[in-house]
Length: 445
Image 1: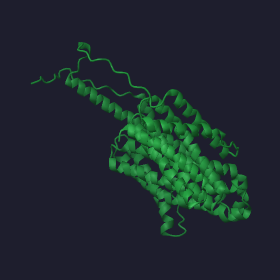
Image 2: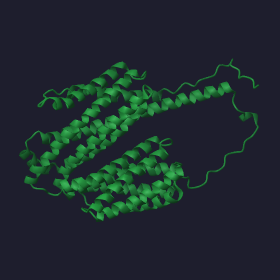
Image 3: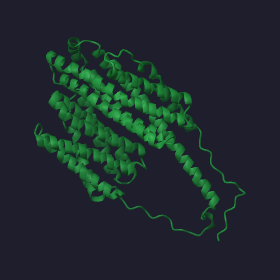
Image 4: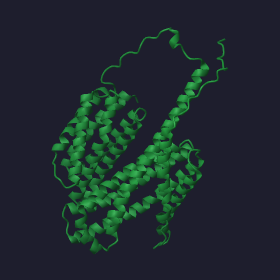
């Protein structure tokens, strides 16, 4: 599929998704409305996949970010259907605002990348940046409890309609035709390099590109792990676990005062799920030289874990939705406390996949010349710790041993080592390969 055809499909999906969600929302609660909202989620995910295909070589970071943002949007809009039936309108509204926040933030670099590729005029891309920034700001305000209505969403919505029409007509193609290059000349100053020199230059370029890719992957993984440590640490240990430490009645009494903190914890943990996907594939890019198939499996294990984490956080979204609706103590005790425990149980199951991921990463790191053996060993031990803690309760009820609280040090070590490795690589430029002066090209026969 050419870029032009892929862009036209993306344009058709932009327009179809707009219609599907609009009509589906108007038919909320009916089978046709549910089907249209689910169709919208499929179309949204397809837009992300098509954009990823178009941008992954020229702007890989933007491509991955937009793909994950659109995937998160698709998941949240579909999850809103379940949350509405289980917890009420407040939970569905929170899921919708989280989806709009993901869409707005993920689309900002997407518009800038389209402008850099000259697939959009700069003024048009500027409209998109402004529209998506307002959409993200409005969603953040709604999540914080400040009502903004639909006014801030209008510029972004109109941009998506216009973008859909433009892509449907032209696809992913430059807004203006590229200017022709300079004509060829027989001047000796630009004659072709000798074969040996060309081979050395190609080897230098290939080696430099590989080192640059590894540096970017290490930096992305390290920064992502650092952000996740901060966000997950605060949300889980600062907000959720203190609520789970009490019984159902005490938790129900404490929940109303925790409404702002719980909403922020939901936002933070959904961000962690998105970062998990990005980190998993960044580690794959960094370690695939060790064993490509195992690196791919490790990335998919972490992606599966991220999906399970997102399902777990949906339980917290339901509890935050109950608080948004002003549910009473009886409802909070009947549905709020089970929602908190459901989050913990589902997340614990997901840690099985996370443990497998770390074991595979440790094995790949051991085979890699770039990673010290002691770092690889600590990462593998961390994976084994998560597996033991998650599988223990499945084997024996009331499993008392919790070892991940100690073995998690391997994750911290990996985080620090990746950042140091990326910094050192940046300070050390690649040494050019100089061909041997005695080498002569073979004479043409």
